[in-house]
Length: 503
Image (cartoon, rainbow, N blue to C red; front, side, top):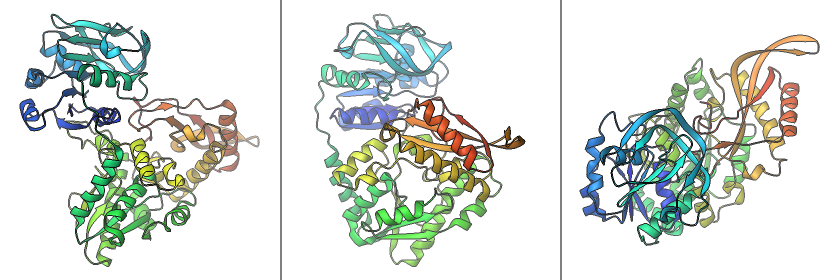
């Protein structure tokens, strides 16, 4: 197995899942865990040091030197590479020329780059840079901004870029080269084994009690519902909450698609959610309010049914890490309603079978479970719904405006040949007034933004180069058909530096 050491990176679990994709079992450990404890307890074949939000020359770096005392291959990624440089005699400085996003890299002949061209694109996300390698180190890659983009020193291999993200060309090959050519690791991991293990785990946890399962109609909640149903049968009661923040016809679509496959109950809680969100502008407050109200609904429903002790939900790793709830010292990007937005005190115990997985891994599980294609291919929709696609206060008027605009976006998007390959495409209502002219009259109405991204896991994403004809048609329809919107703009920002949702 491979031990992934989490220094607070947004991508730590992504590293672990890429290792699993190579067929090698991996576990994540906090950077505050003693290296010798890890070595004695699990005997890893290698360590991978993650990135992180900190700077190695500011604090704590010396306390991590024990990781370099183990006699195993070590791969350092971003912060992990800088940490090695700082602790082993090199030098790291703040760079005025930061790198975020695509960067062209030139590599030298080396086993970790075996089978790759000498130049290709990688994904960078850093402000610090290694300016001097430790004595005896060898520079094996460089970019225009970072002359030391990778180096080797003994059994340490450092990469300034992120091979784990989808947008790095040959990233999986680089990791596979490290695992197979350098570590000689054994390939034993499979998704079918994960399914069997989780069904048994849920069965043991719930025992003779009952469990509610939070269902949204998306692939995450549908998969956990299928796992829980296989584990405990009719003792799994699936609850769909209409919170008033749904898209057009969402409730009816969920009822039609899922009621034949599970014990489904739909709860109308629109008034409760919207009253709590009245005049709330701050996105973190919105998410926490929505998380709290969801739990209130589930606890109310649990009281109506005897012997309910658990709540099963489809939390994924991006929710966990962005909420600052990962293994290591990760920063809070935004609280998710089902993680950072949960109340401190709850009557129900949470079960999260997918907590360490990503969306595309969940889709693989859905195929193992032979779920309907409509559920497997459904595009992600945020748990807080349209509340985080309305920037500013949430009102009935603004919800109806956004629903109408979003309906147009989806109607036109489904005509695109590449629609299936788009991760998400949607509309956002901005709190901006815009001067316009309609029918020879002056207007001062709202601005609508369009967002379309390509991703595999939600941790990184690139904006989709949509056809101009599509953008023109959508803009024309929204401004013509949706009263109150007189301007449409297109978001051309990747993640990072932006997130996928605006709030």
